[in-house]
Each structure stands twice: as C-alpha cells, then as structure tokens.
Image 1 (tube, rainbow, N blue to C red):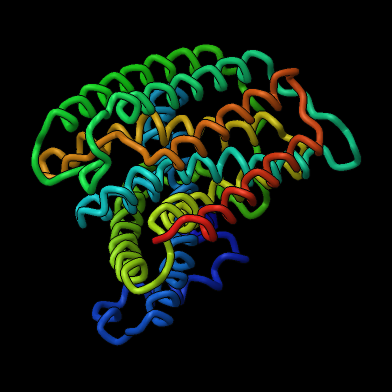
Image 2 (image 1 turned 30 degrees about the vertical axis):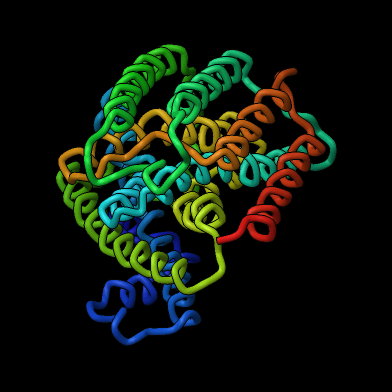
Length: 371
C-alpha cells in the first residue's frame, strides 16, 4: 500500500494523470497549431507536470527518510526545485536566456508574495497572530537579502548598452566570466548557509497525513529507480512546455517579462505552494516559511548559479543579469518579507499586503510593458 501511495499522487490529483500521459505522446506538437492551440498545449503541459512534481516531492521525502538528516538534506536541496531546474535547463538549451533568469526571479516572487501572503491569511484566520521562530526568521531573511544583493551585482556593474546579450550569449565574454565567478561565490555561500541552518534547525513533528505514504516501508533501491524515472518524465514534458512557450510568445502580444515572471514559474511553484498552504491551514508557520522563503533561497543561491555552470559545456553562457523591472520586483519581495516578519509575528493584514502588491505587479507587467 505504501509503495502505491509513493509512486502515485494523492487521489485528488490522479485525475490529471491522463493529461500527463497525453503530454508524453510523441508527435503531438505537429497536430496542434495556431495561437489558441499553443496556449492550450502550454496549459496542458503545466497540468501534466503537476502529478509528476507531487510524486517527485514524495520520493524526495522518502529518500531523505532513508539517508538521514544530513545527507538527506543535501538530496532535498538538489531535488527540492527540480521542476524549475529542468524547465530552466530546457529553456537554456533553446537559447531563451531572458526567460531562464527571469523565471527564477518569478518563482521567488510567487513563493514570497502570493503563496506566503495567502498562507499568512489562512494561518491567522480569526485574527489570531502567529509567532515566527526568531532565530530561523533572522537567518532566513538575512540569507534572502544577501542572495538578492549578490545576484544583483552583475546587473549593477553591467555598464554596456542594454541589448539582446544582456541575459546570455552563445560565446564566452567578460560578462559570462564574471557571472561564473558570482555563481561560484553564491554556491559557496549557500553551502555555508546550509550548514549553519542544518546545525541550528530544531526537530519538528511529522507532518504526514492519511493520504501520504510511510516512506520507511519502501526499499531504498525502489525509491532511487522511481526518482530517476520520474525525473526523466518531468524533463520530457518540460522540453515540450518550453517549446510551446517559445511559439506562444512569438505569436502573441505577451511580453517576455510577463511570461518569465508570472506565467512560466506558475506550474513549477504549485507543488511547494500546496505544501505551504496545507501547513498554513494547520497554523504550522515554520513549515510555511520553509516551503516559501527557504525554497526561494535554494532558487537564488543554488538553482540559478547551477544553471550558469551547466550552460558552459552546452555552449550557452548565461549572464546573471535581470532587467530593471524584474530586479525591482525581486527587491520589493525581499524587502516586504523582511518588514512583515520584523516583529517575529504575522497577522492576516500583512498577508493581504503581499497579495495586493503581487496583483499590482501582474497587472503592470501585463498592461504596461510592450512585447
């Protein structure tokens, strides 16, 4: 029973499995054309990714339970944002440099604003303020601010004319060398932050529910093989998602900024969002902060620098540079997280502030920025 529960998403998500199978069907792209068809295919790819992403998170939890806190924690870092990583790798391979960098910033914004904001509203319903662990709060907000500043430096120091090569190019240059250096520094800082967080983390009560598997009952070899198979399936649908998105952008009036900041990260963030909102409904603020802020740290300090290094042997030299609007939006998200958690407790009104700001950003990128 535990094996079946581990290899399948919870029952309410199994209705999407036929869509997942359809999105893995070869030759499907040739049968769908037109702007409406590309939009439909993009949405179906996103929906098809959801069951796989949920199963992937279950398998990672099972692997962590077998390997222990330290080694399991490292595995969790690698696979914690694997959907975003695989989508970004496919976009990088296609030369969609702006979408790669902007989508990582977009994932951070979605984690830190609508997901955390809605989670705070749920957790503080009935006007009950929720306390936040002071040590974890200070550590996470400090690391989030540091990561945003570190990854903003290439944009600040980039003094050339803004052009097509801002986010990357197919040949090495001074900017790619500098981005590689910053990526290595970011990874080193994240490793240090990971060790500090692991040493200071207090044990938490299990959060498994009736529809979640008992991971220790499943053999480690089965978990590893299943993890590899699901990762390959996610990569296959991610490749189709990126290809469809490329055609959708070229044939529509959507700006790359809107697509990268809000549309592309939407499906990759959803599994973690569900974990965070479930924790919020139970008033588990520590788990909510972990699934949003700590996930954002992984994206900025692990996933994005890793993409810079992955691109080098591919001949895709990713630049750690964001357009001014995306950089400002990321800065707003980081500042707001610091401000609303400054007194170590949150109320529903502070969550509503995050939701309002995010809605204003979506509307601005959709209505005021030309494609």
